Amino acid sequence: MGTLTGCSFTPVLFNFLLSIPRSDAYRERIRLPELRKSRKSCFLCRESLYKLKRTGSCTNFGEFRCFSANNDSNGNGESSDSSRDSNAKATKTALPEQPAEEFDSDKTAPPASVSSRPQNISPVRPVYNNFQVDSFKLMELLGPEKVDPADVKLIKEKLFGYSTFWVTKEEPFGDLAEGILFLGNLRGKREEVFAKLQSQLVEVTGHKYNLFMVEEPNSEGLDPRGGPRVSFGLLPKEVSEPGPTTLWQYVIALLLFLLTTGSSVELGIASQLNRLPPEVVKYFTDPNATEPPDMELLFPFVESALPLAYGVLGVLLFHEVGHFLAAFPKKVQLSIPFFIPNITLGSFGAITQFKSILPDRSTKVDISIAGPFAGAALSLSMFAVGLLLSLNQDAAGDLVQVPSMLFQGSLLLGLVSRATLGYAAMHAATVSIHPLVIAGWCGLTTSAFNMLPVGCLDGGRAVQGAFGKNALIGYGLTTYTLLGLGVLGGPLSLPWGLYVLICQRNPEKPCLNDVTDVGTWRKTLVLLSIFLVVFTLLPVWDELAEELGIGLVTTF
Image 1 (cartoon, rainbow, N blue to C red):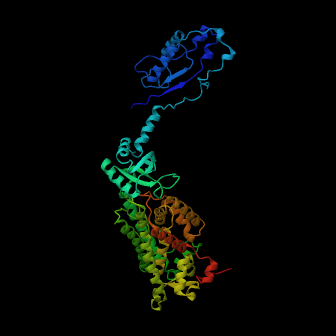
Image 2: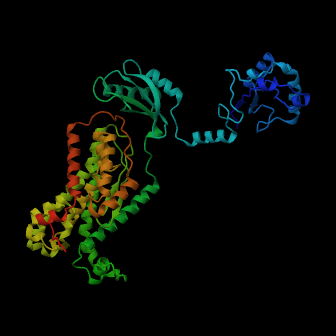
Image 3: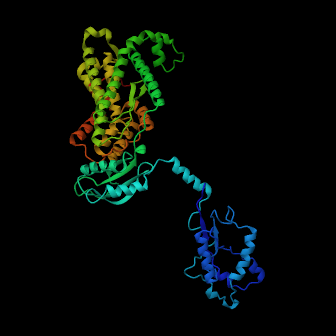
């Protein structure tokens, strides 16, 4: 493997030293390297030798070390003993003696053109050894593929110009600077120019690169035609496009689905608290209980827990179907959902990734809100039907007893329940409700959590598409603060916040057209959704719950 040639200079002031009276023994100790005239010597070596012979002195030339692979020195830049002896002889003939009387205290100051820094200062240019050079090459091999400079030159000649986009500057683009960002001046309507550039890019380079239209970073003003100033980013397809779903991801998704099914059944069993054997209830409610009961006692209650489990799984299914139905017309591919089990709600939802680049921000908003809206629609239907069945005296055998404090977990759902069931039913220690109320409640809470405007959640994607990445940062910080203080979600705020920080904290990648506005009605819909999310996850404090009659507040 070849190595780079490296040279370093250490200038030393020799006028002062050579002008001092000295003996032959002293002169023998001054050894300057001989610069051999050889074709194998580097250009810098031959140039320095020429200056040395021409001037007959070494005023500006002190120590010269060449690390060229063709040099006669060893790996450390030190010459052999034989070359040192020849260098000493060459020094005697090449440097004439100066008379001792030329030395004067007024002449000891170095000339202005000569550096007076000491020898221990590092060379002006860095010297890389073989290991460093090999490391750089290894980083280039292991790193992402970058844009070919020849393609960049071709794209600038064929795509950009007076009629489309006049390039004035280039910057790195992408997470690892694997692309090129073209900055300049737009010469037409941005959507028409972008469509023209995309078609020409395919003609010039084929399906090798993806072209992104993004807002110009650190722009000082708006575009004269209206809207923000734009730039165009170029990334290789294999870097910018998501990879396919692997076999291990399918296996993990299946295992998570089985765990989510188990947690949903567990929720159905826990909803029958008033019917469970006393030893089972004591084990799960008494913190001092240490001896676990016989789990076979729970088998008779599994069948009665299935309707609630079906309701929770149905909400998850509707959620994912909503995403896929919104993505299909836009030709956007989605990954298999990775369900997140939770024993309190049955599930925290699912992680669904984009497996293709989104064409524009409107598509991002539509796909993001379609899932929560579909899941919330089914959950609201079950919640409403369950409340109505709770008023039916004929269905008393199907009702379950739940603590009235459950309805204090959501301001919006608590008010709806209070308005439907009445003050007398709600202002008690326990409330008789149909299992569909629990399924609808859990589904609405899960949909609300997923619509929080933070990270890569559905709400975060919707806010990023409607208002931009900078707006998402502000919404995200506010959401994290409210979750950390327990203002949203009550006892579930901490586990949900940890889940988002671990799995969903990063924002979504930009669209191909990441500049065009999504329209007023989409922005209004996103803001209305966030408003409903806050009222769904906002708990009812004791004073308000007592005043509204939501649950029985016990004071000591």
